[in-house]
Every structure is written in structure tokens, then in C-alpha cells.
Image (tube, rainbow, N blue to C red):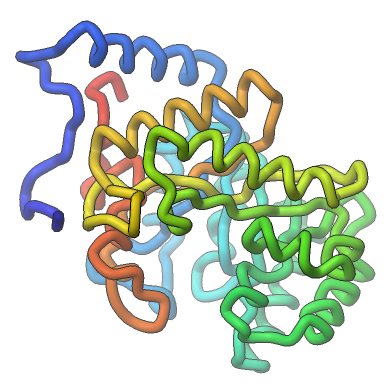
Length: 302
């Protein structure tokens, strides 16, 4: 089920709206009244991909769309214009979870680490994340990652907590990583484990609780969770605009009720995620709450 060119996947049609659809608008309005916790910032516009430089102007444009609805922004890199993201976020009153992107390139890793520390000392970082799914991808060994984490923790301002982002089970399987974190940043994706939509929210909650169990009292944040609006299915998990909106509402409502810090993935659709080394196939382009043209995909009240 691919993306239809030139069309917006609005769930709610202004001419034919059922009672249940109107209720979805009501639920969304309640979330918007107090703002939601956090959103992953999708930086790359149509035709862009990681490695392309981001301008401050394009970051400001997208940040203006998100700022009225969230309290926190998560970024994934600190170089090639990504350093603008936490800087701009603070100017509009948002808090920041700032990640240094680590991989196999030692020179780039060093640039990312140095930029993360510099941003923290200029006051642009509220939580520092040292790497994203590095162990899942196998880009670094556990000992190499622990070395970066120890260095960053030593060099950060005392008030900035440090953590690492990965799939929930990595914190169960790697106690040294869990111990090294000030805060555990867990990615929870029922879709990528083939979970059918009716059970997806419960499955995500179980992922979170498994991390909470091994955290031993440390702060646990869901750094990513989401559901794609198109692109096909993965075993029992099927993408659809209806399913994506329902998962978003249920996840955010649970986070509010249970006081869980959650960053939803993601803000905007990004076509680059379809192919390449990080390619997810057709589904990769459809994780955003907003489309590439900055239209909210599920309701006309935003």
C-alpha cells in the first residue's frame, strides 16, 4: 500500500464524519489542551537525506509547527545543521533530548561527541543521548560504546543527564549499558515485532515495563514509538491511516494517564527512509504525524 502522489491521507472527511470519528477529534483535542510530552524531529525535507546540510531556516519552519503541541523535541545528530535543532527548540520554549549519532566512522563519531558536549555547555541540551541503536545495528562493540558514554558523562555539565537509545531488550541483555546510563532511553515498536494493532498498545506498555524492571529506580523514557500510515504490513502488523491515528491516540493517552515520558516517532514523513543502508521499504516514508508538505495527516483540527 504505497503513498498516493499529491493526496493527503486525512482520516477524517469533513463531509462524512461518523460519531466514532468525531470522538477521535475530541480525544485529540484533549491531548492538545495540555500539550503532549515529546516528538522526534524529522529534519529532512523532500529530496534530502542524512548527510545533507540542514539550514537554520528550515529547522525554524518545522519547529514552529510542532512547538504549540509538544513540550520536548528529540534530535538524532549534532552535526551538518542538526545542531540548529536544540538551539531553535530552546528559543521557542521546548526542552531537548539531543543525540550524538554514532556509527562505524570514527572521525564522524568524534565530531558528533564534541558537538554534543559543546551544545550542552551552551545550555541547549536537557538530556544527552550517546548513540542511537548502535548495538542493534552492530556498528560499535559494547566496550566502545561504554567508552563514549563514560567520556560524555565526565565532560557534560553536572545538571545534564546522559543516556543511550536502543530497543527495550538491549537494556535487559546488557546490564553494563543499563548501569552506565543516568536515564534509560528505550525504543518500543510493536509494528516491527509483527504485533497486530488491537494488541499493539498493550505490547508497547509491556516493553516499557520490562525496561523499568531492570532500571532499578532510574528514569525511563520511551524515546521512540509509532505506527506507519501506509507502506504495507510486517507479519501481523498492518499499516493504515486509521491504525496509525488510533495507535497515536492510545499511546499518548496512556502516557498522560500513567505519567510516562514518551517521544512519538515521528513528526514528518521522510522519503529517504525507504531505501539505502537504513531503508525500511515503502513503510519507511510514512511514520510522520505530518506529511512532507506539513499537513497533519489525521484530523483537520490541527
